[in-house]
Image (tube, rainbow, N blue to C red; front, side, top):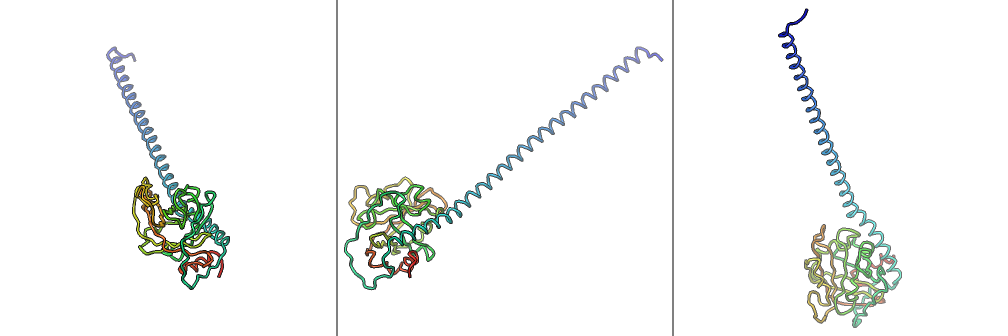
Length: 279
């Protein structure tokens, strides 16, 4: 049956209304789909970023563990071997002399020909019975301090000389040779053994300085152009224990000296025998 013009017009309007609603529905669905896609991309980015942060945290924890644990184990082994080899090369008695004697002015140890050459051992009883004698080498660069422990500043005096005999060592890594430097108290003794004998230094005081304050290495620490009168030993390390914003400086003054042939001071005789594998 034919429709009247009015009916056709009404049907056309209805069709347009349906089509318009369908278009709006498709548009809404498309918009929601785009929003979901955007949210999905955002969630993916956040997830990837979070995973990267977790991975970075794990890597940092592993690095810290390596620095504080493995480098100490590795360096301890290297330093112990170097100390034993040096002590065995020196020879000499390991039983202390029972008769006190004045041996006169100390012999000044000659500087080694090259960096990384071990020329001494350092004993610090205050650091406890498990603190083994540490090798003393020429140089304070990373290569020396990371492997062999205590490094001598080449521009400073040698053991036995009037002036400032200065050394450096790590505090928390690579053997942690000066980890307990803050525990020293006035009167504590520090012993340095070389091919010439044993030098006994008595601890005096510590101070905290900035890393740029190199005046602690002067012949008379911190006093420019002053003429040295004493035989000083200066030990430097990082401060605080788990940081490097400052430097902790420990000063000692030489009290006595005895030749290698006299044997070690009684306080370190047992350690001297153990490191030389004698007795």
